[in-house]
Image 1 (cartoon, one colour):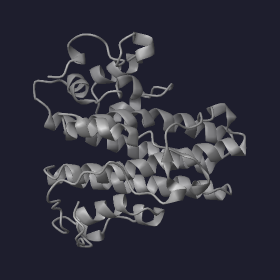
Image 2 (cartoon, helix red, strand yellow; image 1 turned 90 degrees about the horizontal axis):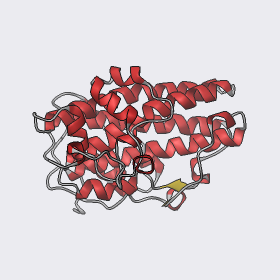
Image 3 (cartoon, one colour; image 1 turned 120 degrees about the horizontal axis):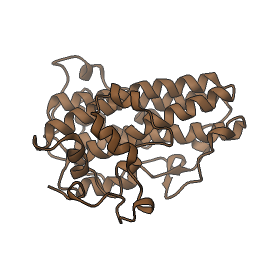
Image 4 (cartoon, helix red, strand yellow; image 1 turned 135 degrees about the vertical axis):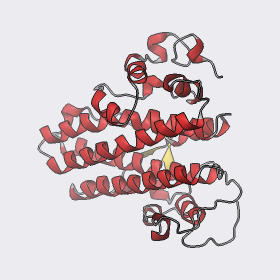
Amino acid sequence: MSAEPEQANSLRGFCRKILESGDLTSKLASPPAELEAPGCGDWRIGSPLHYDGPIRDPELAMSSGSGKLPAPGALRNREARVLCLARFAHHELMAVELFAWALLRWPELPEELQRGLIRTLAEEQLHCRLYMGRLNALGSQLSEHRHSDYFWRHAAAIAESPHGPRAFLAAMGLTLEQANLDFTLLYRDAFREAGDESSARVCQRVHDDEIRHVKLAAQWLSRLSDPELDPTAAYESAVPFPLAASRAKGRRFDVPARQKAGLDAAFIEHVRVAKSSQQSGHPDGRKSGPLAKAP
């Protein structure tokens, strides 16, 4: 990892600041304007940079495991709403860091994909700020809560995968973000039923943006995969264990959002019927057969 200072308008400098700064202000600072204008900014990454994890200030330190997320029906209780908002905000913060991590790890990504990932990263920053705003309105701060390392626990498997950025797209976009298509609507309605319309609107905003994020991942996984693989096979060949199609959904399975994201009917059905390892008896939760094998 280079200790040399980076140009303020460079993609490399922006992503390094997110991972190497421990404070929220630095991690949630928007991309430089130069990176948003076509043909402007420095999009060169240089040699790959590998991080085992992000630097965090003590109040943002992560630990393994976390308490159970409150059930939707419990959100009439203020403390339950606070816990949900803190958990959702931290999920978005981890996503911000992981998009920066991916951009630095794979400097060979096409600039079009880099731009798509930066736009996604910026929206994750906004989502984090929106959830934190609601958390603050309820009299709490993100620093007051325990932070699970759940998303970051998958970084090693993604990094070790022979599928490189395909593994990241399958893990982040088509598993974790696809699942959020369901969870955002489930908790939108729960906040609304609890009388917290402001938090419900944040969930709706996140849901709407998540559709674009899933679409970006699906399009680029297809473009980077063997053209003979259909979307389901491309996903199954690239998604790193222990992530799987069974984790790409919530208890409320929203088909229209997946259709808006451009997922084909066969892949949507594959995710809908996917069973966890406990349900299927397969050690990695996948069905036996050719889709369980790497190409």
